[in-house]
Image (tube, rainbow, N blue to C red; front, side, top):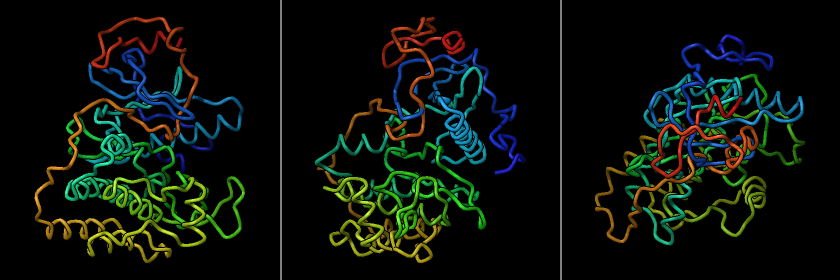
Length: 351
């Protein structure tokens, strides 16, 4: 990505003025998520409820450069596209520390929602409705030349009423180029397309060609999971699942799916990326399937009351140690959080 995007070039980046958050107006509440490189907090910005992702800059020059590049890409992607099924980007700042601010979704991650529902599952029409939300978000990204590369239930967030899903976490997203070589083995192994591997194990950071069809494969695994409410490749570790998919062409069983639905799933996870449908085609197939499904929602389907879960999944790119630990942080209460606890002035906490 070049400097023309206004965010970064050669490891340096500048935020566009319209997306620049004033840290003095940012207030941090309870922590609601944590990843390897970030923590996510409930917060307030100009009296709006928000999710605040605070990025750890890293310890070594190499780590700093990598994290800054990821931060620059993420805000570039978030600011480039708007869609009702994409988490709304509010703004960011890089001083005193790197922060990304988005809308706050209180319905939790799709992963938490499904786990809380087990052993029961979603009604098929609800599952397909969620799948349509995801497919529409992906169609929007691909129409802008963006590959997400990390499509999985941890990066899908539910609205408070649990009626729709929004795609989040653009930390691994990249603009697609016909000539650019992209880093392989990104994303999470269990949902990762087999072309992200090779018959010879790739060295860390080795580059290879792939395209937007990697997201279609990940979508197939998510759709299978929505319908079955089971972990795909159950009984295997993430690496075992990836090896089986890449080198043995193993997929979760679609035998018990209705014929039309099985066709959607199996076409999306085909070994040949070029044989997979694009998301415009996927949306049409899902709509056709819904039009032929007239059964009302089953009474056996679990109804989970809205509750606050982690806004970003534990596998989200992020940071771990950029603000003081809770018991060390001076509190300047703004008002009480709905979840309990108080908000503190971000600017005071970080200086």
